Image (tube, rainbow over all chains, first blue to last red; front, side, top):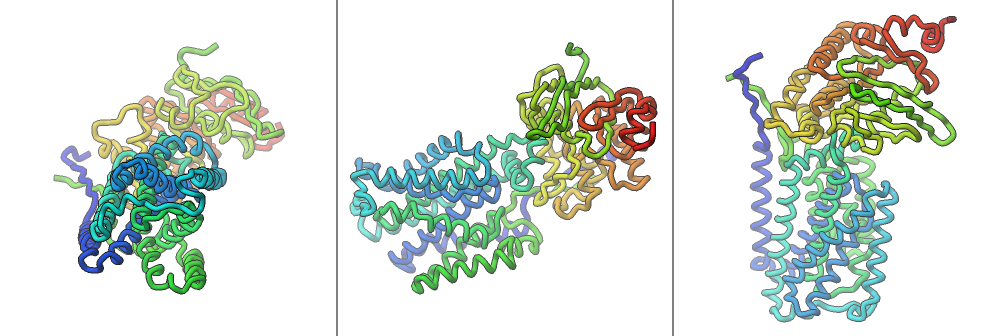
Length: 333
Length: 243
């Protein structure tokens, strides 16, 4: 044994640095949207950020914690509803969004107490049932007027320019915050457990990983992030119709983005969201054919690239783009 | 009835899957410093027994005590924190993580107390099993033999007091078998009690201080290795020889 041998741990590298630069460019470009593309451009930028949030959170849940939920609209819709209610009570709409995110996290924690003990299929359907239940309850609120819906009227206190800018920058800030929290979490001791559960839950248990506690952390984070997406979508759309927020199309979008991008990697979820955004931007006008096209893309990926875009790119890069792992070397000094 | 000196004991544990009784009232005491080999024909219930000891399964009847504490109601992770490590017959590597990360998770989550330097502790477990040269390779790139080594590395990284090995010797060449015997002896030398399910008789005979033979969900022999091998019940059940 060489007693002077030294262990060196590296986390990150050239690929990670390149990714960091790309992310900073993207953030600056998004932040500048209002000056370049005006109000309409800001709206689209918010949509992109909402998609990124949804994809990254659904991926954390399904891709890492193995919790396939088809009812994340529970948090998406309820947060939008909470924002409406808070604003109606006189809270500033932007403050209401932040409170709605905390509310989403709390709802996530409460839900986790009974949902996480359910098995795969039971959990997936159970979440959908909870979402439908929340949808029905929201419809009963006289303020919402059933499916007629209502508007986030208090946003009118701000002129449309200011409003679109604040919403965009808030969306950008929240997305960055959620992303940073997730990356810091995945690089931590808990993150190693999350990744282990992703790869083999039984194996993780047998080396002492507290699977329930770990899954709960991911579930609550995903609830908060998805709630943020819902509240931001409301701020951007400004009117609230329950069906537009609790609708099953959101689940389909989340699935699409994560499966096409690559399940189980943050990079994949982000790429999936960008891809979905691009397809929507250029083809949404084709109506039903657009949906057929989305379906065709999903089938193509399921058959030929089951690990998604990142499943193909990732292994071909010299290092991790978003570094959550360790490279360890032993050097004799 | 609990002997104060056992590290692990099963008190009359039985396991049924529906109507089918896999194990019938297995009572065994394991003492500090033993290397106990468990043998028996396929379907004898060996792996089920191990799953009951580690908490992967809950017995339909009976109890499990670890260091004189009743752990029957505890799950696998809690038993692991209390010093019970295991390997799986079919290795369960974390395929998307590197070999080093696989072991680091075990150091960070499997121990009662986190070591001051988890990285060094994980590295040590890799060097011990001869895997340090592939530390930065992803689990999915390993062949079966290295996957078994990784399985053992991870179990060691949890710093177990009792280590359950489930057929880690299968498919090894003679030299690899010799290395494994040396490694098991080395782990045992640190004061770890070892319970080893194995089909390869040579490995058990070279390492074990005691053998337990199971057949049909029951213990049919338990004692000094040569005596167990020679007993007529074992000859009949395990080797199929006319007793």
